[in-house]
Image (cartoon, one colour):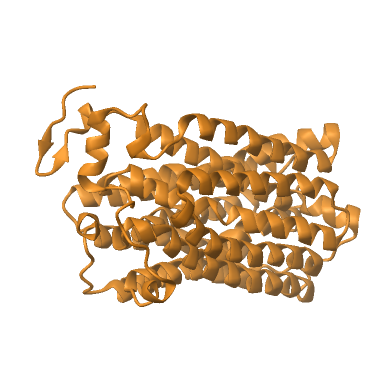
Length: 434
């Protein structure tokens, strides 16, 4: 690569190299697989309800078990990844959730689905803590939101691939084979991870110029002391993230698990007919993830303080979620799909900045732990939300009105509360924490 050029502590990006974006690509793929496994269950809901004679309450209870175990997995993985490192931590998580995904193909009752779904949630809890820590280690501060937005877009790609491929897999091999194939894809990813990933200081494929560029603003966490949970809970950055996750995480699970059923119940679309609407929703969400990450990175590059830039971007992207509250007034399927797609884009733009906020406010050695705390809060909230949704839909004979109004309001309220928590707080720069 070209020679290193520094100006005010930053290196000319054109000479730095691009291996860090390969790392981002690996995280993109793991996140895609993570959401592919989740989306299969939501898309198969009408089939499972019919074949296994489930009620909405049965389905909601299975989703609730996933949310509970995901919460526990998030919390445990956050601490474990800070201890094990990203290479071992993420590989263990992907191996575990791939086996759990395959186990769904052997399930035949509500109880056995709860076991498989719980194991999946427990292991998938490791994806985001490990990924955010990886971004913290591999990217300087002005690139982190964009990198987070890019890998987070994998959640939408997984949700896009699933409705495109699933009807054909189910038609040819049955719904059980869909789960088995999802598990196999995760094991294939593991091979690529071990071949291409290593920490920046040990990665021999990384040029000296790019390593210097990364470490000019962000060093690895090896010399830092991990803080206790009690210490982390005394910091405003932790609580801002917890509030954001608590209020937005359950809404995203609602979209993943109930939107296919909503389209089926209101517009009578089957699995094949739902392909284009679902793909439209998650393609739009993909754009929202990238735009949200780009927006705050642009604000940082223009001179705005990182924390202020993230909160500003969160508030702007949250405006996209408001129209979904009017979904009951939409005259047909495509207007309804349009407001859901816009809300999904808003969620992903918020999410990209929400995760990046942890990197901006916490030292590298505590990033995964804080992400784990926030994910735990979101998972517990998601569990109770899933239990409530199933019972509400059974009681109201499938009326989604209150659910979509709540989904619309959650994001602007979360942005305002996070801004208040972080208001007038002097956040240390990443360099100062190391």
